[in-house]
Amino acid sequence: MTTRLADIAAQAGVSEATVSRVLNGKPGVAATTRQSVLAALDVLGYERPVRLRQRSEGLVGLITPELENPIFPALAQVIGQALTRQGYTPVLATQTPGGSTEDELTEMLVDRGVAGIIYVSGLHADTTADMERYERLRAQGVPYVLVDGFSPKVQAPFISPDDRAAMTLAVTHLVSLGHTRIGLALGPKRFVPVQRKIEGFVRAMQDQLSLPPDVIESGLVQHSLYTLEGGQAAATALIDRDCTAIVCASDMMALGAIRAARQRGLEVPRDVSVVGFDDSPLIAFTDPPLTTIRKPVPAMGQAAVRTLLEEIGGTPAPHSEFVFMPELVVRGSTASAPGSRP
Image 1 (tube, rainbow, N blue to C red):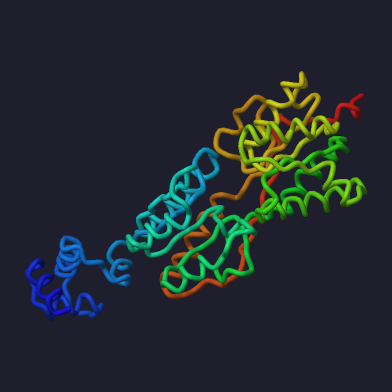
Image 2 (image 1 turned 180 degrees about the vertical axis):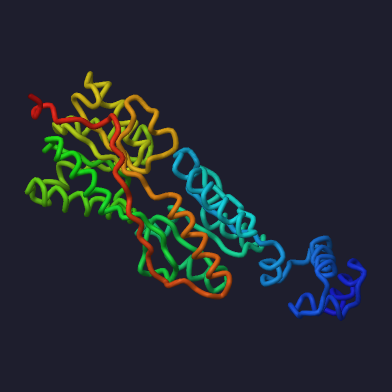
């Protein structure tokens, strides 16, 4: 250690006592001198102590699953702007097929001394994933906030849209238009938002159409992938079951549902109504403009940043879930059910 102190002191042009004060976080060292010592650490290949990395760099990691779905860049932009306004530098880390895993991205961000991490639709949303990874991260002293998905096994703040209420909004809208055969197209069942959407959908269909839960789940719910192709496959199956309206778990899936209807020679919304989820950028300009459930992205992104900065500042936010209410946006992809028109 003495050799290291001497090396760092020589590199920075300061005394060993000054280096020791900086490394131990003691006051009484000029900001420029502190920066010289930290720069010397970097040059000599020594790892900065975690507390110094957090103070000096102000980096915050943001891990998203992918950027093809426009809702993720939209959320990243809100979070990035909010962090920048507070003097932090956002570091976007994106998972890609065949690329880095969430654990690898986390390790990379921690190695770079981030002050905290925001996870969007990460493994915390997967009911089959091991939640111990988040407890290990907490043990390392890195604060984090989890967006989209909830696990009672993780003691952390969660930010979520109300997926159950979203399904009630969609079903109520379609029933008011005379639809009674309403299908739900969504992703794999192991994800928490999927399970919540199913719960909300089943309850709404029970309340408004008096259908038995087993009939709804077995005949009107179709799992697929959160992609345009996934939406197309799910919608094709639901159209084959005589559905006149389809609620989709993402706008990308909804565009796939519109494609599926057209491939069957059907028109949207004359023959089949389609509802999306997210209200992604540019979705109002599709053909037809998409009726969708608007995810409260600005409010969710700002809450994620505010909550994380409270954790970083030493005032931990409640280890609970902050749930944000979505909104129905009616456009041109929904209309009266074919059999209910004059």
